[in-house]
Length: 106
Image (cartoon, rainbow, N blue to C red; front, side, top):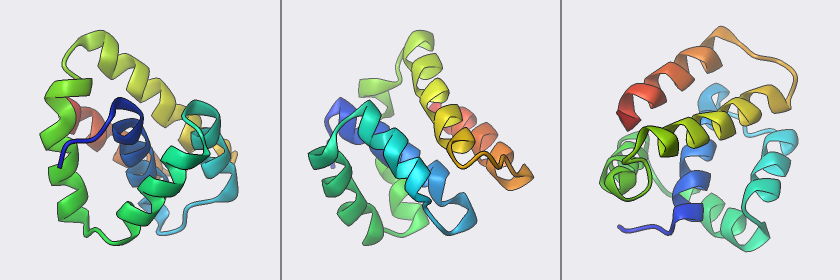
């Protein structure tokens, strides 16, 4: 499934935010600031219906479109860091997820 750039960004951010199994309101606020209500709402609905494997496959499919360059990946990883820091608790699990997403985007 092909996503828009903002949809891809939100999908990756939701994947990171859901690391602990609970997407915090602070994390959603960051997503809203980065993209907007319609995109976040649409992607939250889609994300809720997907398994981890489906999310990873979706990210892999869209990676060549929106994470092809080092600059694209740096921007996306900066957004992920904003998500992780949003609830002011950066856990080891979240740090590991960011590293895994970085590898997924390479």
